[in-house]
Amino acid sequence: MENIQKNLSKSLFHTQILESELKQLDLSAQKTVLQTWVSSLDELNKKDKASRVSAFSAGILEKLLGYNASGNTITIQPDSSPDHFFDLLLGQFQPANQKAAAALKLEPESSISPETEKTFEDEAWKFAEFQGDGFYLLTNLDEIRLYPARRKEKVYERFVLSEMLQDDAAFSRFYVLLNAINLLSGKTAQWLHESALLFLNEKLKGPYQTLKEMYGPVHRGIVTGLDEAFIVDETTKDRLIKEDPRSADILKPYVEKEDLDKWTTDSRSLWLIYTPENLYDIESYPAIKNHLMPFKNRLEERPGTQKWYELQHISAHPEKMFSPKLGFSKQSHDPTFAIDKNGGIYDHSSFYTTELDYYLVALLNSSVLWYLIRNSSTRKPDGTYELTASGIEKLPVPDAPGLVRARMGQLSDFCHDTVLTRNDLIKHFRGMTAYNLLPDGLSSKLTQRLHNWFVHEFDAFRSEIIDSFNTDIPADDLQLWNDYFYQERNKVFNMNADIARAEKEIDLIVYELFGLSPDEIDLIERAV
Image (cartoon, rainbow, N blue to C red; front, side, top):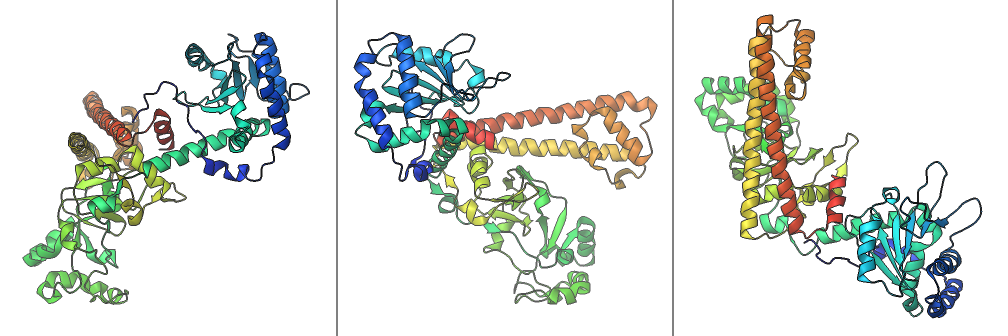
């Protein structure tokens, strides 16, 4: 849930990230400098601001933290921003491109007041030149606040110098994070990023039930052992049924990974000869037997105890494969979770769960869950992710209230139906193109550019027909086809926008379910 506290002080750096740096750190000499500084605070607070800034620069930045105000490498200099809001800039400076690793503001009073906080928030984040991986520091000589400049939330880590005299752990942490070598080299920024990711992952894997606990196991698709024998197209299926009507009993709709996409499965009219082990006698299906006979020798060479005409492996509860289910591809660049309403049998490169839930498919297609899935999956050289059943089963599933579940279900169903409508429109335009414009009509094999006609302009669409099929759109029909092309393309674009809005709403709901802050949301959205 979004943090409503106006200015949040919290631990920004995970101790686990800093553990190796904090071990066996000897700060005896620095402790003496700190003692001297704390002893001088009362006198310093009586001086004017310029004197206090100078003292802080010499006592804390130079003597304690190792910054350098002289020499070729300038690490401390007065503020050079146009509005002169900051008092000191810390970083490596180059005349042609001045950038600061940190910018420091000194509070004029002995305590950091709410007015100073507001001024700091209003003014400090205006300075885009400090927005890289740097930090803002606000101090009153005793308290030092470290703000990450890139954060959406203006949260900070708080250090109190006088308290560190009795707290060695806090002093070590302060020194490791703010000393010149670590801050200026980018180590502190890297630790911040690693810590943010660790905090985020701990939050996402919090006290939630896993997918397996709530919905049961994830199953792998079927393994035929020889796809070319058991998988047939629509024409072959019709022929087998014509030869023997009983063939229809064991011909089932088949889904390959290419058919799986986000929100929906889109079958290419493939069929599986469904002969699981010890269920059918091939002699009762002569047409199917005749089809499989040319492959018999190769089928007998497969490992396993199945008969030559039987499939090599099917998951537990195969009867549930014929019902609506939630499926997804084993390898993908992006989420492919979809409700399969057609009861197709999935191939070995796909997974499915037999518990149908529109809330779950919306959750799995959200940016949060895809972030977790990517983190637990192997990334292949081509950029795809290798998903595993066990990895999906371990995903956290927040137990959302009924109204939230209902809304997620509505959005999921809307995406499913809109994707189907969009895909039908795209396929219809392909058919119209082939039937009306290409020499072989509907028998023509469309090129990739014509297959994805909607991502191009009309001139490119026309040029592809000319270049690939040596034909052109008749001159009298050019304007008609131009208008038709853009009419249908605009429909595709509008549906894509509708889907994107629904997916954005799903993401916002899921962010709320996990209680994510703006910074944590930013981490996820930049990652996915």
